Image 1 (tube, helix red, strand yellow):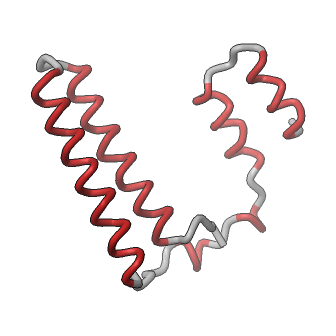
Image 2 (image 1 turned 45 degrees about the horizontal axis):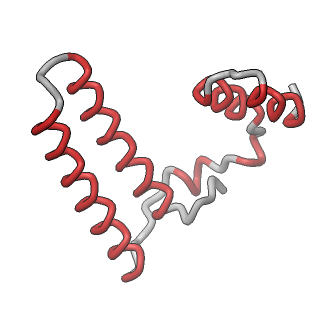
Length: 100
């Protein structure tokens, strides 16, 4: 499937999560270097500031979720996805937006 066809999905109302899965399948091996992705990356001072801001923002949003969303599956899912989002954002900072 070409990127052009995938772009057309947006106008057909295909959910973003489905488009994301299709985009992941388009990633070829040259776009992903396991040695780079799964190696330790020492943070520079600017990255440390970004991590701190991301973590603080996620903590604040988690507090809002805990205070405003009734206990249950939706709240649990929201907190899990917030954690996942914060972790992926930090990975993006660490990898400087690259996968190779």
